[in-house]
Image 1: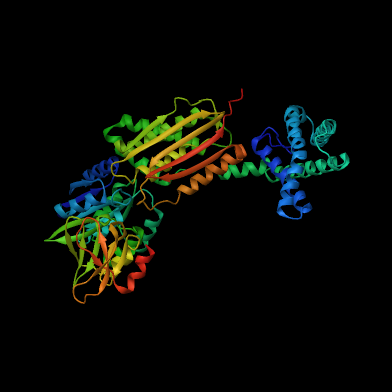
Image 2 (image 1 turned 90 degrees about the horizontal axis):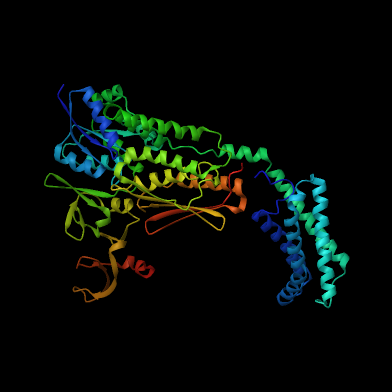
Length: 332
Length: 245
């Protein structure tokens, strides 16, 4: 989020994707305008692509390589540098085509340079607009509004459970109150910075200890986190609201209880969080669930843009949420 | 004041213990039983005839609102005091209809006061609470002074007789004093009206067959059902339903 300056971070997957979409849309538009029928359109598209794609990809590669240098410049210098690099790359590839005699009817160099400059300018302008729409102030405000809220249902039931322990098991009541204090400290904290995954797990464990007090043997948890990177950075309160949902919608409606499975692993530099709980179709309390998911989804998008995703599905009496986010290590 | 017999219904053990502690402090009462869900509460209440049921709203199997509806079918309906940690909709409905409820964590004074003025729910209060538990999971059937609970999912068909509705499950038949139209409205997601006097559960229909009926020798569509040998005739007006399936 911090590195989304007015110049696009070309090393971000989401940004790369957007550049490709904008540039290719322009190519398609050109092919469509020139074409006379669908067959002609595809032929033109193929011809234009053969010429333009290498230039596009080459430019992106060059920008990718030069990115650390570009971000040291101010915005104006950055713009000039970016445009110069694109022109340079286009020119080199054009020369290469001329030298190798790949195309028999190459358009004039000046036209190609003009097209490349136009598309680059449009793209840069788009990112400038997008940056202003998502300026830190706006993002911060949205993150603040999205602060996770705990269910009042949970709060009052937990206090009730602690009250019942005070006379018979004062030690257990103490632990429960300590867990509750920790939980609320996190919930009321300023939750805009990323936290280590291990911290979120600890929070979930404290929350589950409180729920276990109320639900006892009805609540079973299976942690599959042996391959988890504990130092990976994630937005706070990504997992806890999901666990809370799983208890509320999955376990509480079942007289004999059930098992919540929490699975965390890394694959290809991505962290996968998978949470599963039993789900009975009979239960008619579904509102609230969508809200928590929407909230988490939006916070993931603010932190990681297109690189993070949240999917949920339900089948055969099971409900599963699957979150994927990039593996960011703690900065020292 | 006579000793009050009290039944506690809550799915969470700590919540039940807490109520027990408070009731001991208040005195002049006796906890006759504890129940872990609405269904258990109902069966215990039928058996033990408590004066008051302390009924949690959100419970598995059968929630408190549905249990309260069924409790009124008992020969001697107990007074009901709802308990809840948080349930906006229910609390609004309780306030509007002067229904007794206690918010968890429950205070001793509040509980004491509620016990003093507790009384059975009135029909109009029950009607007002019905929408809070839109899909009943059971039907209560009174048989020789005892309450029987029939899970709605077990019902194969409901057939209107002269004064009653016959409730058919795989095991046996029950008689219920209720109108078929009312049942149809309540369980429209589960049953289909194949005949003027019969509602059949979607889940138990095996298929349809054209058979000649004895009286006129005319052929008629009948529905074949799982678990029971009898068939249900499909009235002419409902035959379009067969084509849809």
